[in-house]
Image (cartoon, rainbow, N blue to C red; front, side):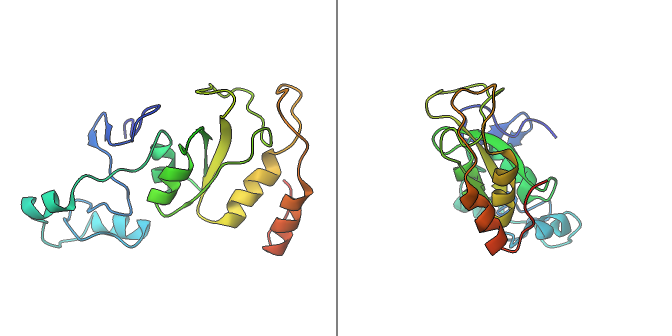
Amino acid sequence: GGDASGMGSHGVHGVHGACVSPWMARGRSGAKPLASWRDLLRSETSSASATTEEEETLRGPRCAGGSSAGAAVAVAAGVVHASVGSDTGGSVRLPAAYNGLVGYKPSYGVVSRWGLVPYCASLDTVGFITRDVADAATLLDITQGIDPLDATSVDADPRTTRLLRSLGVGVGV
């Protein structure tokens, strides 16, 4: 456990040391880079030989992303199905990309910002980290639209529903 990122950080260090993307983690076994989060789970009990300190140094530091790094790692590791974060300049999209996931930043006003602690109020949006586009579109469909508590929110876009149907995904909650 522990804090794997901090607001405005690169998600490089947490309270328990360096943060490592599960897509590049060696686990305790010292195995080579992982192909999927399932390999991370398998590597914990693997008996493969450890990577040498020199090999580890040559690999260099690894970063799980920006301020939503912990959320992205949780999705990539299969701990949660999807996560929500605030995105001003890539805080959702970059960690998603670094972890082999989908990071989606809706246009300003599409999803209510009510309750969001703003970094830059005119740029902040609520974004999603998911394993695939269909899941991101589903979250958008559920959360988009007018919110009486957010004066900047706008009407839902019917194109989202059409996108979901074209992907063969059920619409609504």
